Image (cartoon, rainbow, N blue to C red):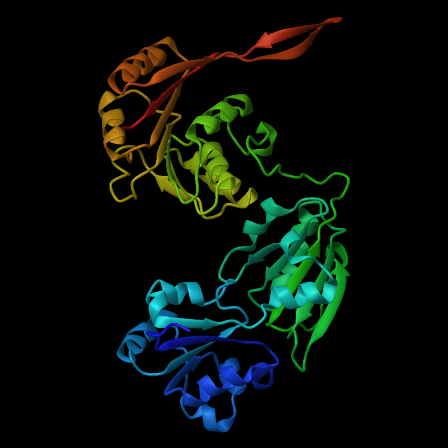
Length: 404
């Protein structure tokens, strides 16, 4: 326990007061103020409830009250492990760890793993609480085990429908309701036969993913096949995309500006290849804007930021990028100069061109920004009569520049 801490976060399970250790009970008994959800407070004995308050909605409205309580013994009740898809991370953005003591309870994922005999390190764990379920579909892989923290009782049926639509109808589903509580209930089904008449809002879902014969399984690495994208022809092709992504080199928490995003393929690859990344797809064409949103949803990255407009007018309010890709509209040196000025030190600027006029521009930018050019010429095999030939595609020139 931190010597200077005044705020204690205690994890509590569905086994309530009886599931708490004597130490945790003592802390609650000594607390001057207790915050928690209605369900958590109902677990407390009457003598402790007198000091308990329900969280306001939205949660941030409680922060001024908490700040006013500094120096007094204050407890926050949280579900399970507060640092695993819990309130702990939110509170640590408001207060320092020196002020807080965190006392976790076994998480619902740990309890579910013990019921199923699954090694938790081999299971992918997600929460769709406050998130669209489409974020899950890029993780559907044959034989993969997944735990999902639900939003409410409707979540299991929505996920069953999504699995079936994506060709994972045979996936085995186990729904755990009120784990470790007096109302604990388990329900087993396959995704394509899922039907739960009455469900509980408090539930988690275990999946054993089984792909149907014709399931479309998205590879977890780049590049995605061209045929997986909705597009109108404005698509950075798979072979070129592989080279582009190698030089964009997304890293944890980085930001991409995708200028002239087309169908959004580069932004989508960026978001899929590193955790906590952000991408801004700048596109002026309204029909392509629709394609970007459709592709983002389909590939499980609905948090892609679509910016309707052109560079540089639409960029002023955006966070500075770690990488910029110019896939369209490379005509003005003023625009490129502006983009370069916004790029962070160590950031990567990648631009492509096909026409001789565009390549000439790329050559001048390479001199200006101490960059280099790569020419990519790709040929694909094709049948011609009784023979096989190599049919060349248009050569693409890439500018690669790294800002000092």
